[in-house]
Image (tube, rainbow, N blue to C red; front, side):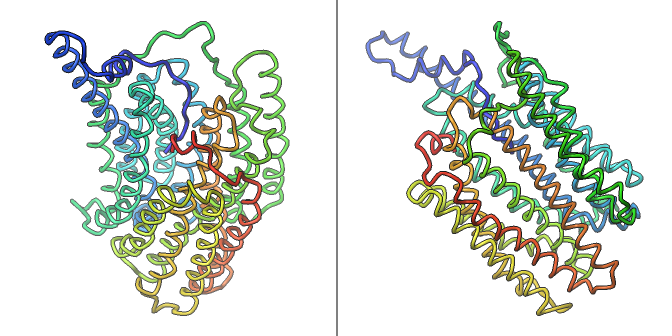
Length: 512
């Protein structure tokens, strides 16, 4: 879910709601009744907009979590290679990483409502095409286009909410996202597993993409009816940075492509050259952003963010952590289904302790611990994640081919609790490292880097896992050693956490 919060002008709905908040004392009965009726109407509109945006975000999250569970069925039905399977999973998040910030800028330029509708429509269409894929290449392509559509859709949602809700209710509206996304993350793997196992109409894995179609159509119709039309731009409207978009996208692709494709090609020298080439491309991107900012044009990224050591350290922290998290889910799903023969539903239910623990950890961390203890909650979460990951690696190695869901439950629960504590404090701490006027650009950058980290995790740890299988190791040793490396990556986050602010500022608590 995008946390981009670009500044938006308030619509008439928000203004009317704010105007009516003071009550009807001192006016005659007719005026009071009219104002009360308008307030009720505005309240219904705000609720409808909130539910519509939530529906779109849930659709994206379900798509992200369901595909992991369905990947073994996809591999069998389409005869996809392990490399193609990695692209099916990672292509979606890579496309989002490349286009998220640009998606927010397109909303600034051409209207939040228009881009939100376009993103929902494209996402729904690509879901239908993905379900009809006849070969791995078609599915990889539609997944990549799905990611682009999500990057167009997601940045608009929170901006629309902020424009519709008055300022005194916007924080409460946004606070609903956490619990709803937690429920969606819990339901996603189980729903995906149930659909694949049920094999509706002989669809096998295809039904996991059918879910998006009715949800997408409903969200599109609701958005068409309830999202207010965009107001005209003023003279200082931002411009689209096409060059920056291309440079950042090329840099990400140079980094990710060799990690996924190198194993299948036998790791020729040019793969390492491509990865090394990403460094000067990113450097050129930084130079281009500086020149664009100096010329008075809108850069893709606010450069002042990179002059803040706490923010930069936090982004490195996030890259390491979300990379390990992406590898965790991919490796476990593949090992449980491909090696141990779990059904998709069984594999989905195995993740239930993690999802429930995430909800508990996020609830405790966000509501009670993070406001009081700040960065200590972040460190507690990362330590719990590291111990849990090590426990998963040990459990897989110890129980071998007789591994059961109950054997994984204690370590999986600890991982989930740690993740919940971490996410409850991470974004608030990061916002505390920046100025209020930088929040919009920082949110877009944080989400883009998170998607890139997820992509790198799927590429890097997927490659380690499949390399272990091809090098003659057993599936048990390959899975346990890959998760051990993921544990090392998470442990590296502990010192990085000390670069971040100790406390969460009050305005960050209101936003999250």
